[in-house]
Amino acid sequence: MLQFGFPGLVLAVVMFVYILSSAVKIMREYERGVVFRLGRLIPVKGPGLILIWPVIDKFVRVDLRTVTMDVPSQDIITRDNISVKVNAVVYFRVIGPIKAVTEVVDFHYATSQISQTTLRSVLGQSQLDDLLAKRDELNAQLQKIIDEQTEPWGVKVTTVEVKNVDLPVEMQRAIAKQAEAERERRAKIIHAEGEFQASQKLADAAAIIGSQPMALQLRYLQTLTEVAAEKNSTILFPLPIDLVEPFLKKMKKE
Image 1 (cartoon, one colour):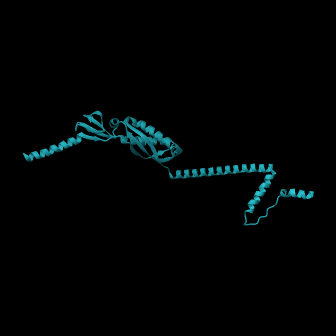
Image 2 (image 1 turned 135 degrees about the horizontal axis):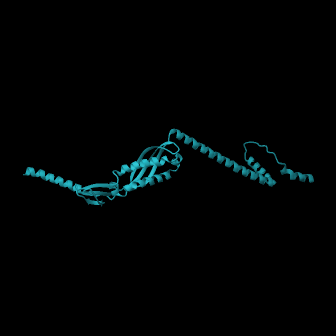
Image 3 (image 1 turned 90 degrees about the vertical axis):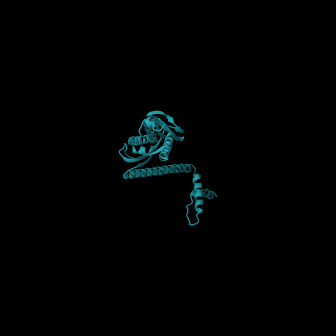
């Protein structure tokens, strides 16, 4: 009897441990449990300690944390017929555990596929300049469209970010030449504006000197002072007759 009773006891203990481990579930704060009892859905369980009926209940654990999903590079032809490769990243989380389990087979895979098709569709309707310069607007448009399509699954798409835009080599060269030409154009405009402002100032100075003869003499004396400060060379500077004319008139009167 002991030979047959001991294996039976071991088997009973094993079965009890198996049933206990299958019946007791511990749900973390960010997890919820979707339970089907004989195929019928019952209210969501968790968080904390929950009990289910082994064999009778089917238990599905759902994570409510935000998921970061990379969208693989997609070959896209823009509206102006330029072929580019674009990848993105999508942030989403489950807000309806029951819908995420009952409305779609695999919400991770479904969200990934809808993100790829939406990326190709939206960016294919944009021009290359918009794709490079208006990234924020395109991100907002992608997030809105993807979120509308995943909402029936209980999935909330919070953010979509276009990461890299890979251009063909010839297009990179063309953009570099365009940027260089733009920089040269701006440099020429700035130089021309500087010349124009300088000429205006010179014209104003000439008008003041022309209306005030003494201003010309003061400018002449200032120039002499500046030249005298240089001691490395000898400079011959003509003396304007206007400076000595008062002395000449005085000598003639005498």
